[in-house]
Image (tube, rainbow, N blue to C red; front, side, top):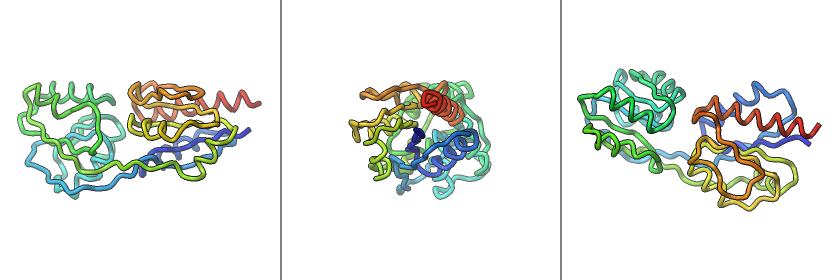
Amino acid sequence: MIPILIVTRPAPGDTAFMSAITARWTGALRVIPSPLLKIAPLDATLPDAGALVFTSVHGVAQAPRLGARPGTPAYCVGTRTGHAASDAGFAVRIGQGTARELTDLIIATKPAQPLAHIRGVHTRGDISETLRQAGLTCHDVPAYSQTACPLNAEAQQALAGDTPVVVPLFSPRSTTIFEAEGPFRAPVHVIAISDAARTRSLMKSCQVAAAPTLDAMVDATLTCLGALDGADQ
């Protein structure tokens, strides 16, 4: 039985994740792209700030249209966001992958000028408030929406079958949306990016990645697929 992988990540992250999986997977695999979120820009004004805060590549993507200048210092939650910000021309400092570690980095740096957190409407960690409580000035700039999308017909059909389905979930919001689509007949194996994204619904299994990073999600997904492939032989 060929395992099924449903990729729920919105563009452009879906392509990067699928490419990383297929580059390392040697067995048969059915991949179904079915994003649970759609990213759309919002009208926003970027205040005068000496540094930017990014907690996703989507925030980085919105920065140029808001007038953010290349060379501006940018604090980034993790490696992937940091690479995107560096490619956009910002002077990057990278955290260890969580909101807490990012705020710790910023507070330790003690920037004298105001900061601006370019983010989505739905976010976790309350970064701006944490920084304000530490005596720093940080403006919230909600620059894009994350609209919920239902699973597409191909994904729904797979989840109604008998073949094992692996579903990586990259945010607590994605988990909430996915759970609302259930219950599912198929044995579902969830890979969660963090404890906050862990599913509480009745799934066959739920594993939390070793770190909230793309590489860790790829590793955990491949491990799960390998176990299913081996059990099928």
